[in-house]
Length: 183
Image 1 (cartoon, rainbow, N blue to C red):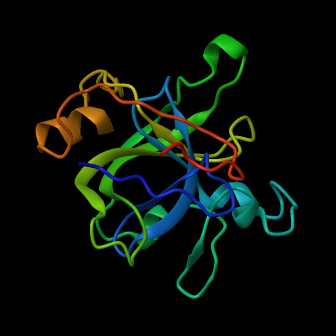
Image 2 (cartoon, rainbow, N blue to C red):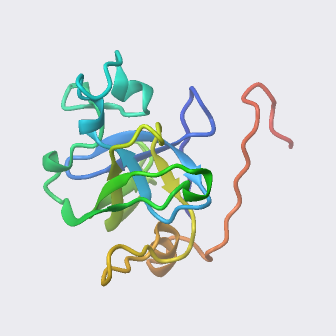
């Protein structure tokens, strides 16, 4: 059974980590995407976006004892790059952008969570576009089409294959943090 840990500050965001050593992010669920989309560190460069606490505003946590501007693919020893491709998210809304696609280690939950869910070498996309501000956790079950030959399985499909979830279906409920759950 997968237990999702959400942020105390915003219950609709999921807490995930990617890479070796792990880099932590708060991401939004995406019913349209298949993979984990993370803002890349290059996007917060002063010449690109001159925003105070750019990484923190985008859901990026502290990495190596300082606020991180975004996913640092070169800082992950387990990153295996596929290439740069269009994201495919938001096309029907006129949104777009490119991302570095690659394989990296992935987990849901914090470093203190002993029941965290981990997947090795999951397809991940590190994007550099202002069209998508916060990272996304793709919950679609379909394979990811990257280039002409790469067809990595989605997060949900990998969790099913590895016996971490019983099916490809899921439920998601976002509610007001001030309401008490039903008993």
